[in-house]
Amino acid sequence: MPDIVPLPVDYAAWLAELKTRIHAAQQRASLAVNRELVLLYWQIGRDILARQDREGWGAKVIERLAQDLRSAFPDMKGFSPRNLKYMRAFAEAWPETEFVQGVLAQLPWYHHLALLDKLKTAEERRWYVAKALENHWSRNVLVIQIETRLMKRSGQAVTNFSQRLPAPLSDLAQESLKDPYRLDFLGLGEEAQERAIEDAIVQHITRFLLELGAGFAFVGRQVHIEVGGEDFFIDLLFYHLKLRCFVVVALKAGAFKPEHAGQLSFYLSAVDAQMQAEHDGPTIGLLLCKSKNKVVAEYALRDSSKPIGIAEYQLIASLPADLQTSLPSIEAIEQALASDIEEGEA
Image (tube, rainbow, N blue to C red; front, side, top):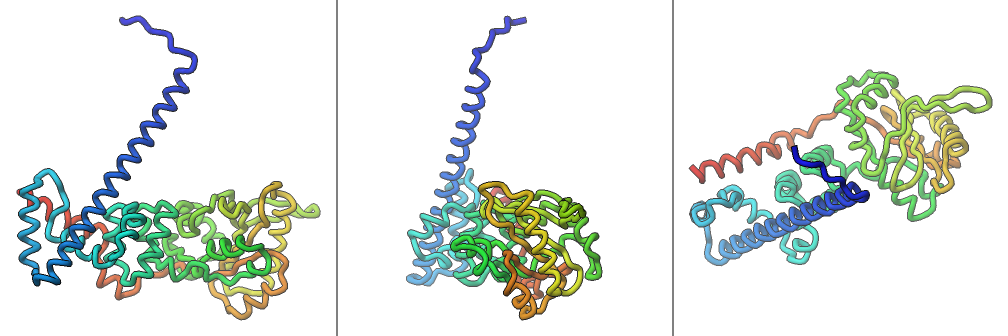
């Protein structure tokens, strides 16, 4: 049995530092490889577009090109006819060299396939690219956000933030809320009551945090506060890391009523008084209801001294029929590309 050599006192700390540096180097190397791959695919796609315009290339030429590239680079995947067509579509969708090099090369290739297949306009693609980079979305999360139409829902809640919060905090808070909130992943019917919704949210808290958006951290449910010797319970309590404030979420299984805003304002006052730390911002309230009259909601918030947002939730909501029938899933895209690769290697 070999002798056990005593380790220096600082060995453990040094080893931890080395591991951190190695992981960071691996991540930088992975990002560099991805950047070069995306840029290569864009350049190939741009060349195909140019030759099609100039020389009238057809599908047969792309199939021959795929065959020749796979023969020349047998160890390199990604040169199937299908993927070459994606490269062409990628270059056609993003003609600006600087934007591709500076922004798009930061996203993996399969993110770009989702953007190409599931979005039709440059405006939508740019918005989701920015959000994917800002929030470090995986490809699957990106697909979920596209399919639930996050862009159309972001910043749409009825709020009084512009009157109750200083700029630019008010703008960030507004953008942090959406309307409606999609809660179909809870598996509940339209007649579900508040406690059942709350129970399901806690059970599926990871999905609910994804639906809330970046920055939300779960603090607790039925959080107890005592005011004047009486007990009160907050439905759901979160903390927003970017806004640096507590967010009280109240659930209402029916239509919005003005008195709901008054009750929520009371909870915000209690949290500000009892839980707010020195550097925390004003507590924000989010009232989730089954339905709302927008004008009534605006009137209810007009004279409220507390920052409150009102939004609807949807327990059952499916993809629009046009998206369901016309767009392949990202898994189907990957399987098709893998099949092309296997056929080329056979």
